[in-house]
Image (cartoon, rainbow, N blue to C red; front, side, top):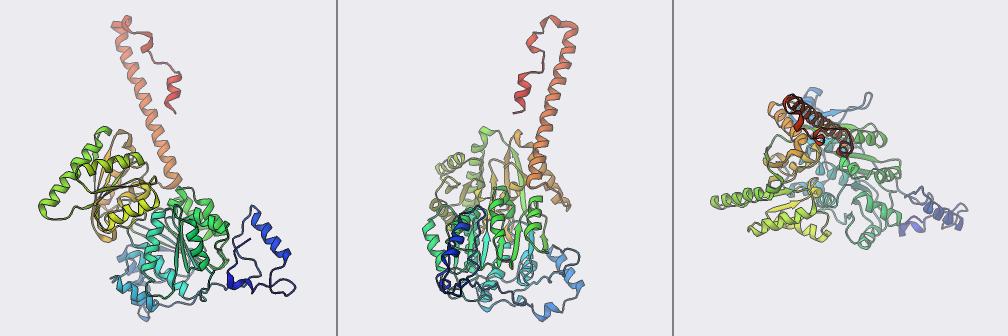
Length: 539
């Protein structure tokens, strides 16, 4: 049956006015638990406090802003804001934390961490979230969107009725990977340090589920989770969704790419009717639009910067390198950088090297270590403890080079990454954008070096076009999600067909020339015919 918090067990009332659920009600609950249509709410007779959405107002200075001034601020911040026709106008962007009228403890933690002014996404998204409205946010990587939802989420939790043992969570964040979930939980903790007894829990795979169970049943304000592990806990009755009034779907495009759409929809279907939803994504494919259509109510749409394109503050270099020479070329590049750093008396620049496969990841890390460079590997084949240790060593020393698969391409915010190297290019432009987004974050500059071979020419053409568009100041439209996959398949098929036709024409041309003088020299096997080889080419 559904998990009932201890302090609510004696407050349940049956239809006869008794103090406990009747055996008939218990059997009904058990039957529902076993059915395929799972309900993660508590029994209806359990008294659950409704979420509270207090009226929020910014400072008087912000309230006095005229519409022309608001548009001028958005133009300066490079923020595009839209609402559906007939909806209330979105709140004004706010360029200072004091004007947001936040809880005193949150303000104290913001100051403690040295944050002086909101980033563009924070300046517009935080007022929207604080006002209780749904939000669809799309921003460049490294734009500060985690704080943009974490601070309003904490403020929401502080407005709710006190948390008791077994209660909660009051707010939920869903993220695609363990690493991103850990990054989010770290930031939530940073902005709630001054709050007494404010509890967060991280619920991800690869860690001890019994420890998570104990933490959830003790009662938490905020849960940061990956979709699969959250569903496990809900099915086991370790927690419920009954008190959630604030939901964040972060890196939603990545969650859909990873196949989490059924789990996301299952969670969203079982939320209380009254709740606020914030959906953040670095790209905006059609699948995200569909999700927003189903689960967001008149959302404020916020777009910061150019979506799904390389950022202008990352210098990008493309180098054609034969597959067998890639590791040697990488060693030459990084050994030279180490020598330059030593000559100038500067530390080695933090570097992330992206590779395609786990085995190659370990191979490259070992080759770098043998050259005297401080490197470690990060991929899905390592245990959770090993992955955490690798990230810790990279963030705080002694490691300078992180060799990773795409597990590290999204969400991870490591301060000071100066260079991203794609030893193997990814398959899509989306993934390329997210990889190079590990550098040049929060306004700093960075470098991206990508090795490519003939098989990467379609993506290389996209990258070159994006770089040219950045240089000319033009926007570039890049296909995303399933649309991108389809376009890539179509382009590859067209390229293959063109190559096949060219091969046929070339052979026919040479046959005509030979026929005139040297017909007798042509072997039958040299004449191309439709057959099994052509069919095999389509595999």
